Image (cartoon, one colour):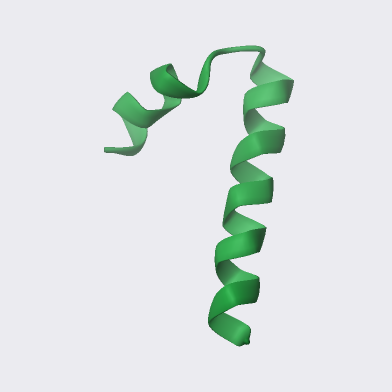
Length: 33
């Protein structure tokens, strides 16, 4: 359950960061990779 919560939090944080920046998710993937 802890692992699932961590993954969920990461996805939520990433989604919120995309909304705040206003940039497409694909652009963020380049920096993440």
